[in-house]
Image (cartoon, rainbow, N blue to C red; front, side, top):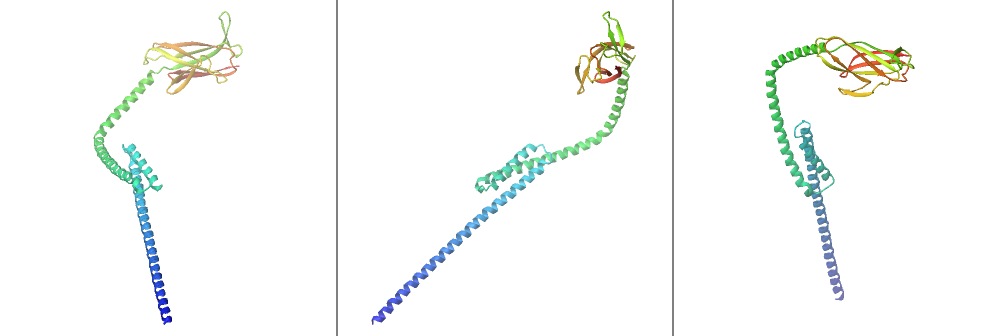
Length: 294
């Protein structure tokens, strides 16, 4: 009798343990399933965020490329397009840094709206320019013959003007220079020795020209010694962006007939060697010569 009771108790204990084991296994299975589902949901959410980020980046890169294309068309909206392109580039940097979608979504939508508006405006401008160019081409065809005729007249007038201008230019001849030693009495003795010379005498002739306008003429005389130094005043003047350093100015009254001009340049310690004499009129070299001192 006692043995039967013990067996019953043992069976009861085994049954209870079995139930506890089954309950524990069921709880562990549920926990494992919930954990797996949470991981899958989390990964799915991350994939969704990653996919949306990639889509935004792809759209932004396309927007940037479209701005580059529009800017390259030399449009009058170039500055506005470049400014919006810079905003797109700044947003690309933000997205790549990993900002949340909520932080840049409104900026992205606004930039896309502004791009659509700008490109539409630029497209309209290009169409208007094409129409204007077409109209201008038609007008140019009508004006072409008239232009050719006018060009012919202009060329003829230019040739005539050049002929007249050339005919009005004064010609300088007989440019000569001698060195002298001036005595206390005022008498000047010609010399070829640099050590004795204290003055240079320069002379030239302006040839007769009936076509030239009468009046005062200015000639810039430049004397350069053997050491490549400009003698005299050493003043400078600019003609057509060219700097001219001259020794003195010779002012001559021209009345259409031949004029002989005589000028003097005082100095001391003249260098031995070759000297260069240049005469300029309004920056143009009109005469030149050389002489030597020994």
